[in-house]
Image 1 (cartoon, rainbow, N blue to C red):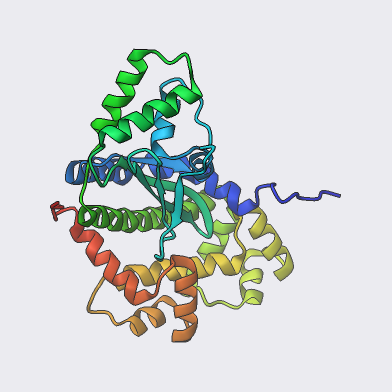
Image 2: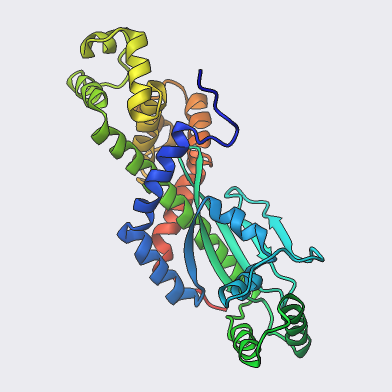
Length: 317
């Protein structure tokens, strides 16, 4: 008998982890990094989900930079670092170092309901480093590595002094844009997930053909199982095995994707998008949409409109 441990990855996690490398190699992901860095002057990188755990094991962004210089990145013994979960729908995390308030913003990216990775903005500071900050940094380095050379101190001092310094308003604007794009990446990941399931699952191809033949995805389970030549229980079991999704989850995702496309047209009312996508009631649509997408349909429409315009809007300090 196989017993899964709490650390064993689920089928959903395995599928999301397989999609993540493909997601960050999409042209849109690469183009966004260039556009964001050009518009804001801030660095952007993508980390897999475990990357957040790695980030939280160090004192903060600047301590991670120290680790990159050949020193071991370790937790601050005084626990001076602040990790704050923002009061926002995207669940972003702000990491602030004890040295000069060096900051990074980490926004989670979900594929389905799985936290697959993170979009990381920074490091940057909200104020210019002072002589006291330089002294504190040098003392910290000396405590951790008494053999540190003058060249290493000079290199770290230069890194600290050359970090971007941004205003609170610019920080807020950059964090908002990062959250909007993380949502867009999540949607792209969901589409990749469905495409991968279709390519890898002969049964899904049969299901899709049957639904297309009848021009509906609301076909009763009994009818659908007869169309593909399986019993209802066999269909559900085999579908989950091949795709990593239950049949009901797959059909729900398809409806949500259709509704999202419809919501991009501002002339289509939310209720019209719900019924045209195959939902039988507005409350059910709202609950399912919020669960799958992370926000209400009306908020998704607003955020999508902002995201579509963001690339044309310069960010001013």
